[in-house]
Image (cartoon, rainbow, N blue to C red; front, side, top):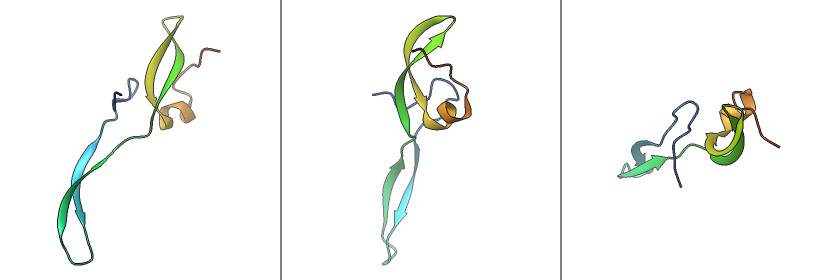
Length: 63
């Protein structure tokens, strides 16, 4: 599955998880991506979109 929003380009971020004992391990923050049917150039198409773009109305859903 693609972890990149096709509307805003949001993708995974990497960093380090820090425990109580200050041990640092690598980790990844994944965006909340959904596969939806949307209208792209007037035609329905399945694209990967983050939920922020869905909620803000940047995507026109195809029903």
